[in-house]
Every structure is written in structure tokens, then in C-alpha cells.
Image 1 (spheres, rainbow, N blue to C red):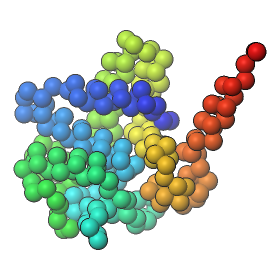
Image 2 (image 1 turned 120 degrees about the vertical axis):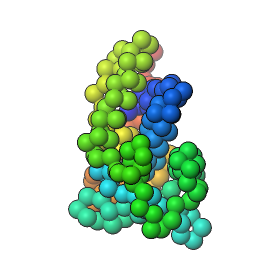
Image 3 (image 1 turned 135 degrees about the vertical axis):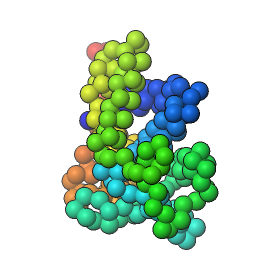
Image 4 (image 1 turned 90 degrees about the vertical axis):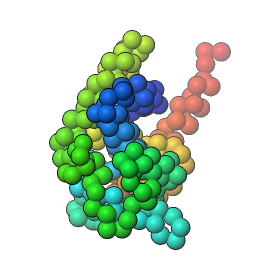
Length: 209
């Protein structure tokens, strides 16, 4: 339930290929780009995206964090890196808002066209499902097997992919556990594949000769 690099790049390529000539299309592109950033950089659950607002972004001691109430009504903070901050600023600029959100800002993260109402988790899931189908259809011509796997992806796959890529980026087990907001370390361990990769690379040295 995780996207590999090729499949993730297919998601990004499908995003950048979206039409933007009409206002409605441009809005869909910008909103989808921000949605994918939220999932990719912060491993948010779709329900968390639907229930939180721009006011969840808070600057502390010169650094940005996203304060989230997640599974089990547990409060946590997630570091906002420069790429996520750029995505936030880009989306807010598109919406005609000031770059940085205010602490009490009630604007939903992912809203309808008029930005008056938050999209439901069900609607966000549908947006992701449609985008996955588009990416898979574009990938099918060059890699049918990868496309078939991608076509099965659900919204939760994006969270799994984020945590896996954070592990590959060198975050420690403790950091991964905090960012993923897992209650048990064993759950986080599922996403650490470095040892498997090292064993696989080492075994490549075993040949017939």
C-alpha cells in the first residue's frame, strides 16, 4: 500500500498535465497540488485534511508547525518543511490571501470553489481516486505492471508513501513515530525498509561465478 518513485512521479506528472485554461480548471489544479502536498509532506489522514483549517499552521520560534488533532482525539504537531511552506504560500497567493495564515483563521484547508465550505473526507477521497486513475492511465503505455498497482491506490496509500519517503530521507525512528503520530513503535517499524534494501543490494553480489 505504498507508491514507489515511478508511481509517485506519475502522480506528479498527471498533476502538471492538468488543464488550466478555464478558471474552474485552474482552481482544480491549484487545489489538487495543495492537497497532494498536505498528504506527501505531512502524512495527514484524509479525515484530518477535511477537518482542519489554515489556522492549524502556526509559527513557533521562527519555524512552522502544523497542529493536528488526529486519531483518538490526540493532539500533535508536525514540522512544516520549506517545500510544504512553499506549497502553502503558492496556494494562498492563488486564492488572493496573505502569505501566512493567522492563528485563528477558519478557512478550510481544502474547500469548495467559493472557499465557503470544507470538502468532506468522502469528496476528497473521490478527488484522489480520480487523480490516481488519470495517473495510472498515463503510465499504462510505458509500464503496465506499475500502472496496475497504481490504479489500486487509495487515499491512505499517500500517507504510507509519505512515511516511507521520510524514512528514506533519513529521519530517525523516533522522528517518524512522532510525525506519523503512531501510538506504537511497531507500527512505525513497518515503514523502515533500509535494512531490506541493504540486504537486497548485498545479495546482488552473489553470482554463479
